[in-house]
Length: 417
Image 1 (cartoon, rainbow, N blue to C red):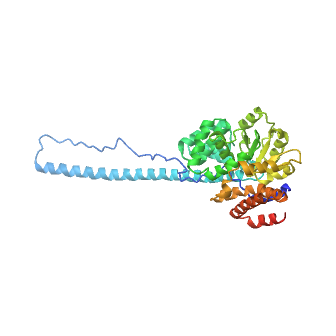
Image 2 (cartoon, helix red, strand yellow; image 1 turned 180 degrees about the vertical axis):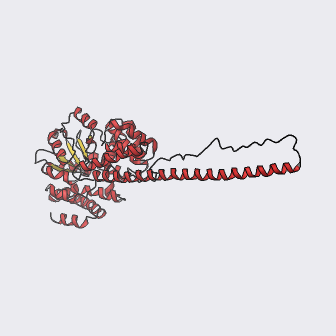
Image 3 (cartoon, helix red, strand yellow; image 1 turned 135 degrees about the vertical axis):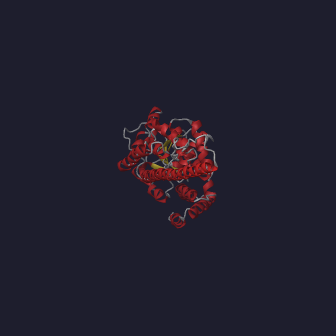
């Protein structure tokens, strides 16, 4: 079966790594109001009274004078209160203005980062996107150098530059429960190969459901799809983080080397891969061409590409790709027989959880990636007259096709065999 058929069937199941921060948190740290305080305003006035004057008239005169003094003091204090209020209002206005500027900067940065993260042909930000992010960071450094936004955006704009970790840690200290910070901290620890701390942050993401159980269920079958002692190339947040967690914590397919296209932006990450024996391009632009060159130079590493990878990456190398469960295996020879591997995985290894129980929209989209394997097995089992296996595969296909809203398309393809 032609690979183009498989590619056309794949529902886009990749979800972006960098998300808009939607936490209900203040965009700027609280500012202490300046309290107007004058220590010299006691208004104590002493009146020298002659010792010989003790009659009541003089006492009345003194009381009147004291009342005048008290009235004058109250007027002065009233004026002082107005001055204090004016200064405090000015302080609030300045704080509000700064907060507004920080919020505007956050929107600008987030938009550029989101556009960068959802590109279908490259993981590296475009020159314009990078310039915009850098400009926001520079503005925040001038106007709000102690803010969460400055430190967080400075790290994110570095595209996994581990040398900027102090800024990420400062951002974490300001907002320790922020899930975007936790994602970046998990990525940092994965890149520097600190499994213990990576696990801490991944478990936080699981607890907050930022990394869902259904994604973990899918990732388990994704890992099982990879060749023995092979290399699994991932693209976005879900497949990368879920597979890493399952490997390091649950010990699922720890023989497989994970390579994230996203993390390849990091010089540290690329250096470690070179040390591990992978041949990498000197280019720093991680895009479609980069993956094509990487596969060509590392074919002996048992390469498998996650089906959550956008099809734009797959088209240039489609003649070398063979559908095996939830991955495309890369082979230089064009006659690789992928039936036996698919047959074994379907009947012996895969949990198939999302085929039988996908409840969220994301899980339903991910389940569509079982279709290439199922269509391939349907065709092969039909040709070999294995009726029971055809029935089983058909039932699974129908479940997936209904939940990912591809029933008519799948029915038409089955009827063409």
